[in-house]
Length: 322
Image 1 (cartoon, rainbow, N blue to C red):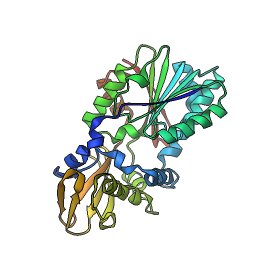
Image 2: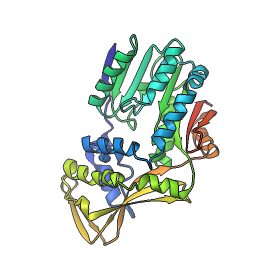
Image 3: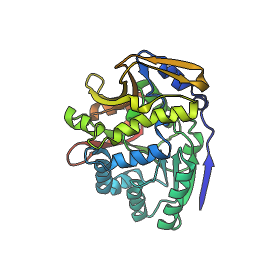
């Protein structure tokens, strides 16, 4: 059985106000507007990024899931698997396989911003896992999660891919507290976390030699042009990504190659860039076991188990309600 529901969209992204706020900040900062990376091209570019030799995250996370899914399922014993930001559910299949070996699951509840991708993924999973009940939600995990997290019995909520690192500290706490309010005793929260490591490895992952990440970064400007009537020239901006050691995070920027004046018609906004001036487009926080435990404890979670790949590049943290 498949049922796909559409969640109420949070008002802010529809208005473009996060773009106005970001382009008028000092320094300019669009990292709170990640949805502008993604259209059909952006999704295709990101899929290519995950397959690049420099981008270790997807491979490392998948290797942990292959080795540890049975243990995670045995510890959490869920009747329902809830996934935030499910995408194609490629990595999730390892958990579904483990659940099937353990006699379940009876329910899978994926949330993804793309309704079309959600339906296609649900159809494939229904063929692969006869008897599975899928209640999908088309929406943004920055919006209300009440309907996604509602239900009876034990639940395992998964948030893979290191996406939690893309939040600012304040937004991350708000998101984690929202998830925490939806969970009860016995529920578990499995989160993918990119780990602190040497600068060269981190920076190579975001500055690939093929230039795919650079195109993905510039795609934010193309989408602002299309959705908000902007006249950015994406090719007049250079991609730059570096590791901010003080804040333990990668920062992606687009840097103006010369003086520019940009008009964003739907916001009635004119923005000037000096030569060499940048706009931050993404942050990606990196964690240690200690910092992950502290961050999630502030939102009411207790670290129960910690898993890493054999090279120690990426982590999966299993939390329970504190």
